[in-house]
Image (cartoon, rainbow, N blue to C red; front, side):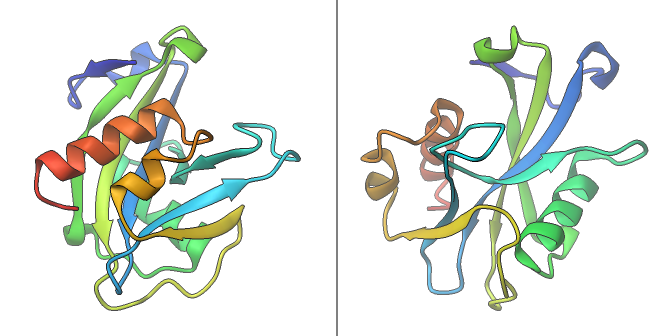
Length: 148
């Protein structure tokens, strides 16, 4: 994993993604479990988010993705950019923007991708061997910033 400047030229990357660490209304970490049938990251715990579409900035993409995947109503002003990174698994060709969002008013009303899993603490997530390395960094960054 390599940290990148979030203002980097996105055209230098094959794909761009936006994803988020989510804290539920009852202060639990919300992640998804992707079973063995998923093409990307099968049998892993992952964050919610996805591809940025043409004309979207990372924040807009995240809001759309969370609406699609969790039926959540996200105010763009409520998301916090944590940073951007690339991963060895893609030869650093994909750029991933990472956010934090606290669903303070409980707008999550379903799950249209994977299976929602709730964790009480960062340690609970980190104890899962099926948690992705990038997600581990994001959790530590949220702790460092006092978000979790």
